[in-house]
Amino acid sequence: MNWKTWVLLGITFALGMFTLFSIATRLPAPPEHQVFVNGDVLTMDANNRVVQALSVRGEHIEALGSNEDIMALVDDRTEVIDLAGRTLMPGFIDAHGHFPGSAMNTVAVDLNSPPIGEIKDMAGLLDALRARAAVVPEGEWVTGFGYDDTLLAERRHPTREELDAVAPGRPVALLHISGHMVVANSLALEAVGIGPETPDPEGGVIARDPDSGELTGLLEETARLPVAARMLDLGALDFLRMVSAAVREYAEYGVTTAQAGGAAPQMVTGFKLASHLGLIPLRLMIFPMEDDYGEAIAAGTFDSADLAAPRIDVGAVKIVADGSIQGFTGYLTRPYHTPFHGDADYRGYAAVPRERLFEKIASLHAAGQQIAVHGNGDASIDDILDAFAAAQAEHPVADPRLILIHAQMAREDQIQRMAELGVTPSFFAAHTFFWGDRHRDIFIGPERAAQISPAAWAQTAGLRFSSHMDTPVTPMRPLQAAWSLVHRQTFAGDVLGPEQRVDVMTALRAVTIDAAWQIFQEDNRGSLEPGKFADLVLLDGSPLRDPMAMRELKVDATWVGGALVYKRG
Image 1 (cartoon, helix red, strand yellow):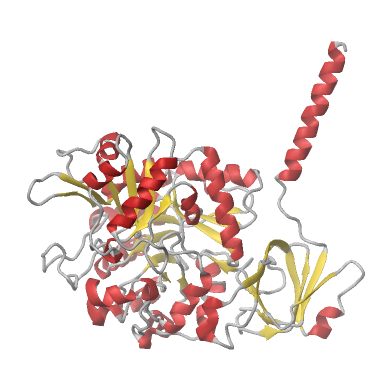
Image 2 (tube, rainbow, N blue to C red; image 1 turned 30 degrees about the vertical axis):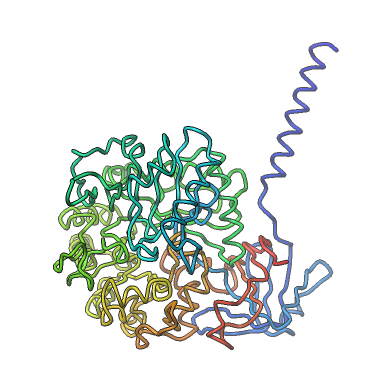
């Protein structure tokens, strides 16, 4: 064959490969017309209407009404889905999470304790790490996630020496269940330049043995960041594998809008690649970290469009103002219930000093950015509200919707102040289930524990709020987020603060339309109304008929923009 034939064959092969690649990476397409009839269709509109049927044209909702109304729209090209009495409702919106963190088990060992995992004591934790070390290639980090010192029999963190022994000659690092602490072995500490003489960074603690002064391996808050960054410094294939696994899980539980809260630049780049490869059929809302983008925002060179991609939007810029209550790093106005390391006056601390927080919030607000601030302790919430009040006084915005992430220990006066300032809380209501017993008995005592995630106060104050799972801190289970708002039942079966419970419809709105409103997306998702995206979830039963069984309901199918992305069985 002459050279022209070889060139022609090469071009043909390249075109063929491009065609196959395009087909393989194409997002699922919706039917031209489909109708859903014979069910309980929870619209989550302003009147919380419940209808029988729904019509979808392409990606968008066309009409809602009775079976007769919708069947009148059917023609020969229409696909008819019989709901058979099941519940159809808007797809769930992840109000705050860390996509694709739910799939961390693809790159690290799961060290969660019951009710999430199986690890009950230090021996079990170390055995799991040894097993992980045996399959990790030589020279690579051995990592784990989800351990909870207060659920281990020994009631303590692993030590640097224990991690040295579990994988000799290898860096080892574990992420605490809260996400706000890391424990590392000697080689991992050396790899990021942390040694005996390294001072505590602003807003963090490098833990030391009180007697010897030696490093214990525990790193709190900002001190954890260098090691955490190395743990999450994944190759492209590992990251794409995580994304694919997380998409499958989110779709299985009815999530149609995921959130990557506090996304760093490297992760944003990975999302754009995954999007262009067709690996993210869900909608994704990115909250960039202020630490990474604050200077560009202040200089006026930040453009959120640079971070976006198909089905990926950029929302609020995130600041982390304090830590976690279960890690003793949340910043409180009154001391912890159980003295931390014997210090009866210990109240936690701010991850961002008050003066610096004022500067960060003022800069973002002046630049016209929506802001999301992580605040667990009530002292931290005081700082956040004071800083935002000052920013609003300088640059008034009629509808700012600053998101106060977690708002765990918000007092009643703070809830009222949020309503006055245009602040909207996203409650981690499932804390009542996963940590409620320990909040009451260990961290904050019965009185304050009964008031965590105070949804009833927010409802009384006229505040719209959302409810989230903070995945991977807890598994992505939107119905658990709603269930906890309604029941506030702990893992041991007690009710924690019954006066803070809300009704089922309010709870469902907190994972659908109110979560969409919180991120300025209420015009296109969150409720079933004509013109909105046909982002739908089909449940095998009704959350309205048996509220206690709500979290046990199965998702039979999930649609994004009218396209089926998950079907059970």
